Image (cartoon, rainbow, N blue to C red; front, side, top):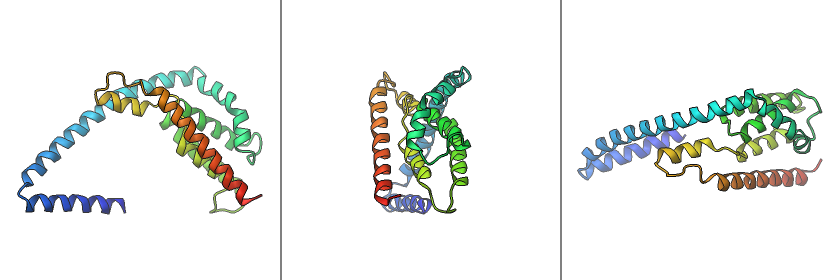
Amino acid sequence: MIHTVWIGLFLVGIVYAALTGNIAHVSTALFEGAQEGLNVAFSLLGILTLWMGILNVARKAGLLDALARLLRPLIRLLFPDVPRGHAAEGYLLANIAANLLGMGNAATPFGIKAMQELDKLNPEKGRATRPMITLLALNTASVSLFPTTVIGIRAAAGAAQPADILPAVVLASFLGSAVAVLVDRFYQWREGP
């Protein structure tokens, strides 16, 4: 659907430019836009490579495991329907810990595996369970202590101090996650046992 909207926008723009005698500006803008996109992509690639390298070293040093152990009581509170020691618990811990460390690429496979394990506990296949909805809400809000992508985009755009937004992003992501959990709990309470 979104592809149809984009194609429609492009066609309307090209037809309008042709009718108003500005078709030469369209081709110029296309090439300039492509070049600018490439420049931003390479700038982001360098910054993301640096952060992913640092975070990978932190993971190999055991920081992810330590964070997962620290988060275990939180997992029990957020996912009381998941049996203690079930495989889903480990994937949930790894997913949330990876998101906290800003390792979005590492968090996604853990989230998918957690969802698959939660589906094994699902008595009614094809319908999301409470833990599945909670996981989705948490991943959508996603608390992040190191928002590497935003920092990379700011650096690529020429910000003098690209990481100076860190406190605001951390606060906003914590508040977003808190609201997501509260809304999730409200609907679970309203639906009943």
